Image: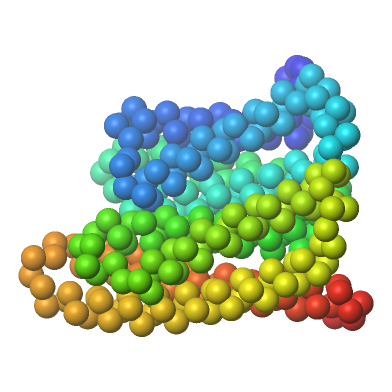
Length: 287
């Protein structure tokens, strides 16, 4: 190997690009997928192709040296992005395998194979980068929690969108729309907080410890309300429509109901854990 692919990390990034890009090309060759879950898989494969490509180009052209003016720790950024890609492409592999693949579909089996191979490459890359012990925000527990919350919120928005596509407008209750609003607002807030912790120019603008404490309290309450409202209105609506023979795919929206409910409870637990860490940080309590 030559150029930027001399090291183990460079070789792994090359494999990540090849496997992710091949999975995406095979799906597009088949005709693409129009459902929200299919769009999520397409987005993930494209994202996981572009991230190692951009990192490779930045390091080859020494752009990462210039970026140190804005980002204090390049190794932390690459480690965090690799861990995010690992989560995302693992989810795409599982979703595509369970929702779209079949045993007699050769093209689908190839897509799953290349997606799983990309997942393995990203996982090995993330482990090797983590062993270097980068000390930045994305590599520590607080950063991992924050981008995991954002990742789960993306899955929640995908599942909720998929659910709404299968029901009539009068079954989209205000409580469920409120839950969708909560997922969107908290996702955007997480992205903003990550940027505030990464970019040098933004780090000292606000007292981040108190800001994150207040945000975690608000986010925990919002997710608690979303969990209650989704459970009440979502499952009540399911049992109401169960006797309606005109509805053609009861299993589809029930699956999405379960995914949203489980993801909401998971994110609620993550925000509570984040809240405990924020309290410990603000009041300097050792946990």
